[in-house]
Length: 391
Image 1 (cartoon, helix red, strand yellow):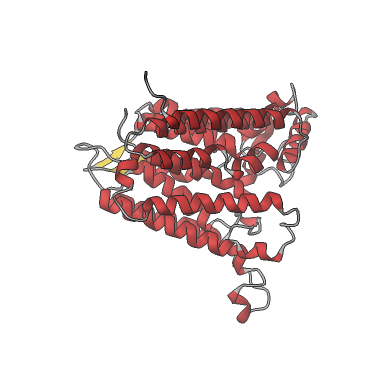
Image 2 (cartoon, helix red, strand yellow; image 1 turned 135 degrees about the horizontal axis):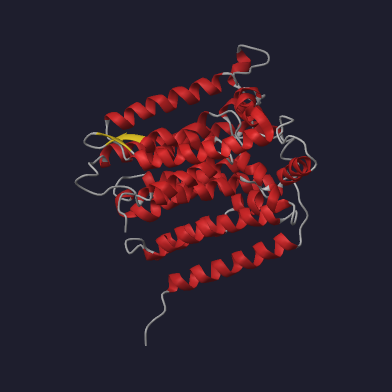
């Protein structure tokens, strides 16, 4: 008699619990947090107003087109966000399940990180935040890119970036990169540009150039909870030793740009794998971006677990790389848990210090990813590396 794989039983159990509680909450809960703001924006669109008439709409045009789901039922966009997260997590968990190099304990830990992560239960299920939609299209955009389905990859990145603009920092690493020679992904670039111009053109005809307001207002926003800049303007800031009201938020944009340009040059010089480099670029953006919202981290969490599922055998060869990934995900999960159990977290003074440990943990992860890339740099022409195996 064939023995049932215990990991399969664990996975099926987690999936069952996840689906049951997700569906139960979705159908018996009221809108809250950011989702109520989304509803107001969609109501404005239905009444003929411009969705970018005020600064609260920091999203791309794809978010505004969700009004066509919203007009059928107020909960449909939130259900879509949760379904897309479930599909992403299911795909990654199946890759984990099929990974023969990974032990059963590690697989179970990753299943828990996917299906019982407070980041999803708080910001996806309860708050209904659209980052989960963006994350889905980034994850599968990279999967299509990895498997050389460049037209689909370009389309998926268009939807991701025109939902929220942050994944745009990944594009340079995916368009032009170096193996033995400089490479240019023409079809991917063409697909992205054509589909982006088409959607932006439709949006311009509908709402004019106000759709670019989120890019303009990004410099005006204050530093938030997980940003190192929030720490530097808080009561515990060491800058208070030399100034009364420290605020260096203005440095954020410059540090984001500088770190991305420097890392791109490094990735070209040392022939880093461009897909893993694009993930590192997203992490660099979050590390130096002053608006440190927790929901921004769902995309790198899924991407890191996807990377682990595909390249586990090489990751464990270099000390502390997997540890840095686990530490980062556990930290983000822990802060998400704090967010929901403390109704006074917004007013708590200790909230302003979270940016410091977040910066240190993120920096540790980025450094380990760079070390991993340096010791595993190879030519895609001659061998397979992170994400390059198309099996």
